Every structure is written in C-alpha cells, then in structure tokens.
Length: 333
Image (tube, rainbow, N blue to C red; front, side, top):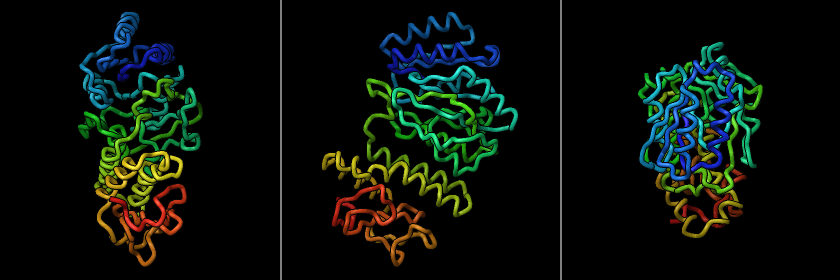
C-alpha cells in the first residue's frame, strides 16, 4: 500500500522498484492511494496502473496526513499480508519475495526488514543487525515506523486502523498495537530491503517540526498501550522508558534545545509537564533511574522512575544526552 502525497519525482522511482519485484505478480497487488496530490502523481499512477493489471488507484481529497490513505488501502485489500511503503522511498527487487518467504517459513505475524538510508537519511544500522525468526518485544519496539510486513488477519482480528487526522506518531500507535498482539515477530536483516529517503525539499512529514502537545500526547498514548497489555513489570517499565528516551529526551539535547526559541522551549516544557504530572511525584520503587530519596523535585514519566530533575550543572540526573536550563528545579511554566 502506497499513500501518495506530493512526492514527485520520487514516486516514479518507487513504482519502478515495485515493478521490478521478483515475486510472481500474481502473488501480490499494489494499491496506490492518491491523497489529493497536485504535482503530476495521479497521471503517473494512471499510466503505471494501465501497464500493471494488479495495480489499483484510489483517490481522495487531501487529508494531509498518512493515516487516512493507509486505512483506505487496508479496506481495499484481501491479501494475506500487507506492507506499507511511502511514496518517496524504494524497495530492493527481492524485498517482497524475501519477506513473504521468511514470514511463511517462520509463521511470523510481522517481519521487520533491514532498512537503509538514501540522500543522507539517518538510519540506525545496529537495530536490525542480524536475522532473528523470533525477536524479543523490547528489541523490536525500538522501531515504530510502518515499513513492516504484517499479517492482515492480525490487523482485522483487532480491528486496527491508523489514527486519522494530524496525529503525531500515528504509525507508532498502530505498530505498537501490532507488536503487542503478534505471537511471533521476525527480523530479516541479511540484506538491505527498504530504502528511506531524505527528500531534498525536506517535505517528509517526519522532517517537519514536531508539535510539542501532539508529540507528548501520542507518546503518552503509546505508553498507555504498553501498560494496558499487562506485560511483566520490568518489561513494561523498560519499554516505556525506552520510548521516553527516544521520543522526548532527545528534544533536550543541547544542540536541539538551544536552537529553539524561548516560546518553543516553554511549549515543550508545558506539554511534558501536563503529561507527567505535578511536582514532587514519588518515583516508582525499585527502578534503577529513581531519584535520590525516591523523590523528584519536578516530575517523573509515569511508572518508569525516569526523572526530569535538574542538577546545578543543568543536566538531568539520569540522561547525559539531554538538557534542561541551568539552575531550574522545576519545569518552567
């Protein structure tokens, strides 16, 4: 399924990579969802569909976000597995066949392919370093991007759909639900299978400035999904802590934080404080990241013991990669 926004000239390269797949064309279908594109994409899709009978084009008014077009594609298919691709990216010619073979061989509900970057797009190359037919939940939780092969029966059993509208981390909310319900998640990492592109116009949604309120709201929603799954306590707390570090604390890295304007920094602090609770919340007992004497001078991420307290040097007690203003003993209002 390929949601198409304004992605020219990259869309043609993606379509070429799909046409070059060495999987028998009778064994897969391609659904292109035109989300109100105005850059020549619809005409290109029409020409491609005319030359490739297993391709369908769905058109809709611009929704401005990936959730709705992905849901339209899900509703239109009856395939055993689905894979979500973005219009600016590419697949290796053996990607679909390899992922499908691996899923069937190991009876996996999900397959995570190794991803590479294009045009300088940063990708964590250590995350999916080797094949693993039954990966641990916390390991795979480190990637919440939608580019995964997923058994459609799993999606339909849970009646899952992507959040629609301008919801930050909408793909992470969907993928987290899939992870928590999957009986087996496999990692396929013996080659590069999917290529994420950094677009020259920097118009990827993921490249736009994050809305602090929307981002913290979605992170809290994903954390609540994890908590609701009733996992073992150490696994639950570790996953939520990992999420908080990746999606929130990176905002406070010195280079990023000091590059923001005053009002944007204040917006981040207010948004985070509204999600983590009031000052002097007691940390979760027994967690390795809890504060001295078990209390924070500001607030804690719920049930993780991760503290936002600042020391005199202006660094949080637990994260040396993040930053808060010096001499602050509470979140600025």
